[in-house]
Amino acid sequence: MHAIDIILTFGFPVGRLGGVRFRLSFLLPVAFLAITWRLGSLPLGLMASAILLFSVLAHELSHLLVARSTGAQMDDINLWPLGGLEEPFGRGRLQDHLRTLVAGPAMNLFLALSCMLVLTSEQITPLLSPLTGFTVLPQEAVSTTAWRMAFAINWGLFIINLLPVTPFDGGVLLRTYLTARFSEAEGRDLIVRLGLVLGLFGILTGFVFGLSGLVAMSCFVLLLHLKQSEEWYEALSTAHEFSELDFDSEEDAEFESWLEDDLNRLRDIVDRPSGDSVEVYRIQREEERLRAEREERQREEQQMDEILRKLHIHGRESLSHPELRLLNQLSDRYRNRRQHH
Image 1 (cartoon, rainbow, N blue to C red):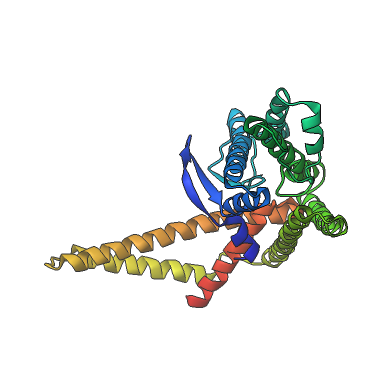
Image 2 (cartoon, rainbow, N blue to C red):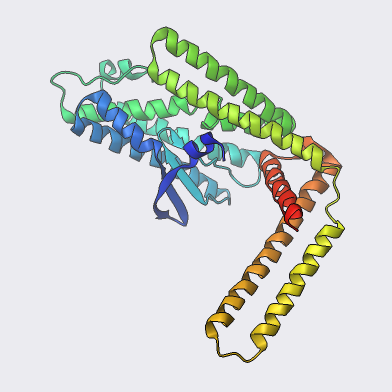
């Protein structure tokens, strides 16, 4: 697993809601600590952290509700400081996907506009730039500080998620449009190149103007798109290599024969009278393992056949990124299995 994968996926479960598993990225507590240090006050840090958690959760729940209204299902939501890491998709038409993607930023915009109802223009104007640090005004009421924090956080989430780079909603939205307008390969290639360019531009801009937050976010975007670029072209290479292979080989038949012989041998042992219940239990577990291995192999072969059929008929450009990644994973397993059998 790539280091960036670990950074993105590392977290801990916090529960289920409506059949969806919620996980909290370790980056969120890190953000809480950074906010508290930046504000220089534990009570203010806790208040800002609570507002951020609520805003991120509202962002993801909006994705979830709209996705379900289209008939789609999100099984996992991984919360991180700028939204969620699971790409939300509607089911069916392109319009359903677009509605689902827009729902998250729209919720943050709604929350930001709601905060404007209780704030003055003088209190809001300094917060319109998401790169401007939040400052607690002297002699300011705690309630006013909380409303200003809520506006700044939700306005920032709205603006950042409009950026045309993944994993932000704007980037996923642009990629959805590009892959619908062009081929899957062309759309993916364009979005990866755009992410690399904007990541480098953000790093340089952040250094020039002394914006540490922009530098950190741009470094993250750059690393993510470097990883996506490596995955994408590696998957394309694998697709080209395996498009010429025949998976219905004698080795597969030998494996099936070996598996069937083992299952028959274990059934004969279990059927014999024996007083050793522990041994019988062990053999039954081994039989279950072999059956599970056979079922997994059959599923993999079905998936591989479908992907290769699509590859032969429509070419590499027809494969989606998840299909290419799956092809890469299955091909590695296939090679390893052939080496061991």
